[in-house]
Length: 444
Ligand code: ADP
Image: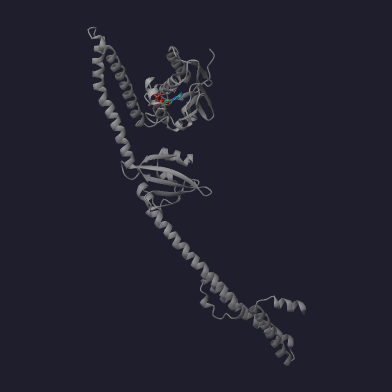
């Protein structure tokens, strides 16, 4: 009896009432049966009646659960009433939460649709999960129809394919708009979550137009200045050759000749930069022998009186798929810098090596080096650590900018390391796809 009492005490009021009610009902059934001399039959009838009533309650509760409408569950009382009211409460709470999530989702959708930039959510296979309204305007993506399609099948651009496989948060590419001729889009990829990414699209037509205007202006101005400069140089040369020229004019004329030469050099480099900027990727399969270029460059520089020791270290027979004159410009520009900034008792090394990752063309010196704060700006046009000195020793400040632009045409990168007082290393890294491995020499 004691465990039964303890069991009843541990129950809620409603549960206790329910158990006591059922027991009383069964006892009443048994009592009525006993009056008719059949207590077992009375108990059985009462138990069946209680079971039928509970099954009815259960079915009615199941209906209420499925419809979510607990007002239908009107017969509830006692424990059933309590269970149903708890469910009703939870159900209402869930409905309120769902409503607030829905509201939040509406707000998020409204704000992403108000964004001027396109945003496309992609899965690991670059298939579209969702996109905002701007993505539709900028790239012509259709929210429902294009869901599940690979974005690089819809926006066909080799640069975009490269960006998607690179997974580089800093990298961005520009591509022609697939919707409006002449418009440009800038694209970036931001990975998030387990394996999702966000492709961000921005209209950069205006920026591209301004940069083209700047390029055209520099190219046109350089081109226009060349003719008058040629005339001036011609007259200066004639003047310098004229034996009747007063002796006092000799020095100014020589200086004017030197400045005219310098201007011609700058104009030539500016035109070369403009050409490289609008040239795009180098599309050629001419194998360039780096070792031979190194030897030619060494021969050209070694004759100069103040040149440091020049070493050539060719460790690979791989060749670069490219345009020989452009790779030569890279070598000559890096080498002429090394020569100008390395004292005569120093050493300059030209190295070519390759591995599974690609090829490295390295020009290193034991010269004066460069302060770390200047390194990020070295490839900017006209940037020189010491303007006066660079000008005096024939620098234009355009050499490294040209190197960078040439390398970009080969998907190659320039890495600079330098220590003031110790020397510098300029490493041009060419990707494996740009290399041609020379066939082994055949014995005759
Ligand atoms: P410049 O025509 O002045 O050499 P560059 O673009 O080739 O222009 O180089 C930019 C600047 O970088 C140089 O003015 C110089 O200050 C620095 N620089 C380049 N190469 C070296 C080097 N090997 N050692 C030291 N400083 C260098």
